[in-house]
Image (cartoon, rainbow, N blue to C red; front, side, top):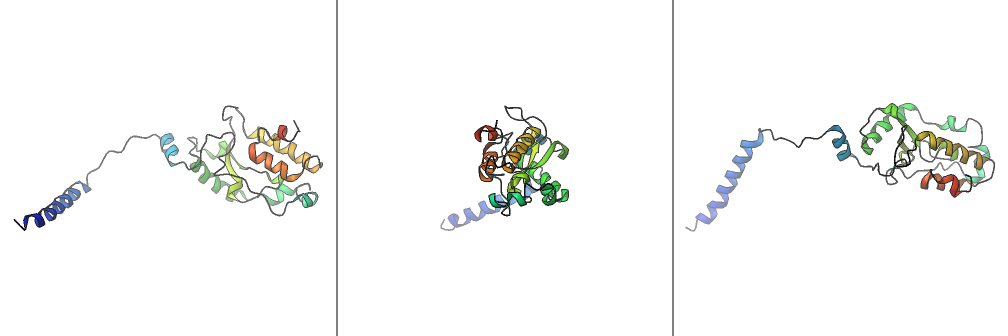
Length: 189
């Protein structure tokens, strides 16, 4: 009897190992998921903020070469944004990764603009992934706004900064906080 208490755990281990081997080749049914559900499960960024990006994934980033003192020789020079825009090879690769991170059901890259959250025309960083996100070209969120609405705001802020109506940093902060209210926050609407 003294040995029985030593044998029982060994037998249990052998039985469990045999059971594991017996089921190792057996296919187990996984819960059915659609590609939309799978995308939502894999998402690391939230769509809840649309038409804004998830601030944890896309907080914005500025270009250290652009300051209030340098705007007349950087962003306010015709062609500046084009001269620092990253290649489409870079932005397209990033767009695919970020579409997955946001868990968008629609994965057609043509339906998204790889947008600079703080625009290049306001001193946004051209290549930092913290300043780039796949902005839907279609209406999103309760407001029904799309990327074209943000483009209009960007241009008005750019003109205000270059006309010295608004300083650079408040314009950057306003658009990064909420581009849908940036103009009214700065008294430009």
